[in-house]
Image 1 (cartoon, rainbow, N blue to C red):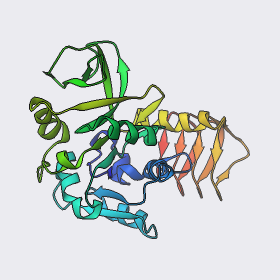
Image 2 (image 1 turned 90 degrees about the horizontal axis):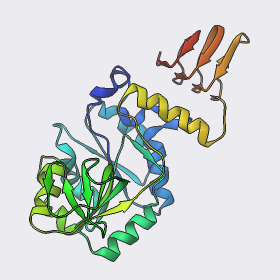
Image 3 (image 1 turned 135 degrees about the horizontal axis):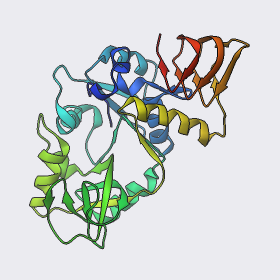
Length: 281
C-alpha cells in the first residue's frame, strides 16, 4: 500500500495544483516511481489512498488494473488509512510505503527479513550513531526507541524512511483513525512486540518540501548521468542553456540565458533565466 492521502502542506504551492504523490520527478510522477519498485519486487495487488485532490489520484490510477484507490472522505491518518483500505488489500501482511519517499529499497530482502524474524513490524531504517534520529536499535537490530519512548538499551540510532511491513496480527489492531507510530507501533513495543529494523544505507529523498523536491529531480538526473532532460514535444528556445534541469513533456522554455537547477512541469511555460525554481503553469 502507498500512503498518499496527506494534504501536502509543506509542499505548497505545488500541491495546490497537483496531489503530492503526482508531482513529477524526472520523466513521471513520484507515485509512478514507487509503484515501479513495488511491481519489480513482485507485488500483484497495489492500493493507494487518497484525500487531497483525490480526483487526480483516481485519474492516474485509471487503466492500471492492479492498482486500486482507497478514497478517504475524512483524513484518517497513517494507521486509519491502512485499516480503511483493508478490503482492497486482502488478508495477511502488508508492505506500506509513504508516497513522498523515493529510495531504491531492496524490497525482496525486506520481506524475507520480516518473514524470517516473525516480527510484528519491520521498518526500513537508515542507521545513525546511537541517540541520533527518531529510532533506536539494539545490537540485534530490534527497535528499542521510537520517538521519545525507550524500551531497552540502544546500540544505534536511525532514521525511519516511511517504508515498512506490518504483520497481519498488527493490522488487526489498527484503529479506524490515527497514526501508525503513536497509535500502533509505540503501544506494540510497550506490549513487548518485536519490531525490527531493515538497514538501508543508500540515498533517499523525502519530497515533502520544495527544496527536497528539487533535490530529488537533480538526483534523478545524476542517477542517469544526464546533464538535463527534455520530455517529448517540449520546446526549448535556441538561446536557452539547460543546466541540471528537467523540462516536462509539452513544456515551453523561452527567453535567453540559463535554466539552472529548475523543474518545468509538463505543458508549463518558463522564461529563462531561471535558477532553482519549479514552474507549474
